[in-house]
Length: 315
Image (cartoon, rainbow, N blue to C red):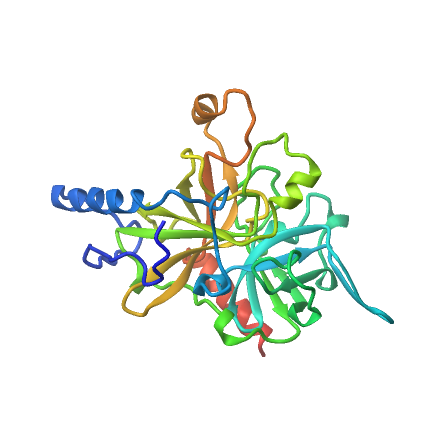
């Protein structure tokens, strides 16, 4: 996959339609297919066993590592640090982090995260690099959208949470939410996260540790995006995409005119259609391939909640 951070050249004219952004003419369909062919020829890497994001890559600051069940304790000899779980997140303001609701709300209420158990840790390999407590950013407050209800299956409805940090991140870590200006009928959609790069269920604990905690990415094609849909669905039957540990990570689109990435979605989970499961995974060896489910941050109800909650954090 190309790592040219100017993004792919957008070949279609901007069409802004409140609701579904679709194309119907034969000419438009030809253009979509041409775009898809260009992208698919380059998209041969993925978060799972895919393209690593290097520290010099601008994308390295677009997805943040979120340690849950975590502790950072100062001791006479230095610091003691630990975590029980992980997610991915994105900063939409220097002190406001957007992630998935299920990263902080557990199936059992006693397992829910509290502000003192969650940290943002900077770095592409936070647990595989030299330890630096200055890279740990403590959370001051957690807000989960009221309509979220914990669901055991991937892709729960209303899967959003906002975290207020005790101290602000450097400005280069902030990624703005997308607006209608960035929407095209066909878009390159970048998936980024710190999750598993190998998806087989027979991975033992030690193998899982080796496959977690490093920032990877891949590109997919997003077409027929619906502004008024709460979810964005991305096909992963090509065995490429997001998995455990990528939850809360951003789905990014690139604005060529602004030379900037914008957040369009947040990883909620994955799901299988039964027909796809039988076709691609008859022996039930994988858990994440199928369809990636992103929470659509431009869905009016979600966008309103994100904006109001962020404002209240900063009053």
